[in-house]
Image 1 (cartoon, helix red, strand yellow):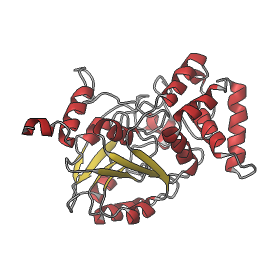
Image 2 (spheres, rainbow, N blue to C red; image 1 turned 180 degrees about the vertical axis):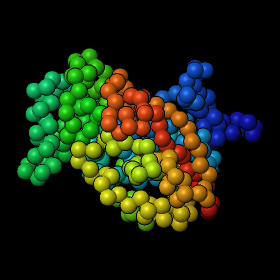
Image 3 (spheres, rainbow, N blue to C red; image 1 turned 30 degrees about the vertical axis):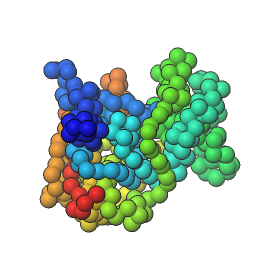
Length: 320
C-alpha cells in the first residue's frame, strides 16, 4: 500500500475533506463555514455555526475528545460522525443527559413515543406541568417519559428553554414530523455521554484533549445577553458558575483544549497567553424577532444578535 493511500484515513485527511464540504460559498455572508445542524434539539447558544472553526483547530494526533459541557452537542456530534473520533460528553444537567442517553442508544424508541404526542398547546401545557412537578420533586417520571417530555417541551418552546413557554411557530404538525424524524435518524458513530460536573471531568481525564463550551461569562464588560442561556428559566448551568475555577483548571490541563467562550476584555485577559480566534456569525436563536430590548436600545443596538465569542486554543503538552 503506498503512502498516499495510507493517508486517506488520517484525521488530517478527514478534517480537510469535511471542512471543504462545509465551506461557505456566499461572498456576502460573514460565515466562513456553513451551519452544521446535526443535533436533534434546538439549543440556544449552540455551536452549529462554529463547527468548522473548532474542527480546523483540532490537532491531527487526537484520538479522543472529552467535552465537559455537552449541551446541544453540535460540535461533538460532528467530530464523532465525520471525523470518526471517540467523543465522551458530560453535562451537569441530569435531565438533559437523560435525554441524550436515549437519543444515542435508542433513537427509534424515542421517536415512537414522541410520535404519540400532538404538537398543540393543550399537550404542551400538560407536559410542561408534569416536567415542573418532576423538577420540584412532587412526582418522579420514569427515565423514558422524562426524555420524551424534555424533548417535546424544549424543542417546541420559544428560545428554546427548559420549562419554556410555547412557540406558535413550532406548534405545527409538519414541522413536528420533521423534527421527530431527525430524532429517529440520529446516528453518531462513536459518542458516549454521562452526567457530571466539570470539576469531576478534569480529575477523571487529566491527559485527554478537551473541547469546552461552558456557560457564557456575563459581566459588565460583556455584550452577551442572559437570554442566550437555554436554561435561563431554571438557572442550573450559569447561576454562580465558577468561571475563574474553569480558567485555572484549563491552565493546568496537560491534554490541550479548545474553548469557545465570551469575547470581552475580562476573558481575553484571563486567557492572554493562549492563541485566540475571533470568528463572527449570527445567532440562530430568535431569528425573525424584530423587537429590541432595553439594554440593546441603550447601546444603540439593533435586533440582529451577532456573536460576541472567541475560540481559545492550547495544544497538548504531552503525546496523545
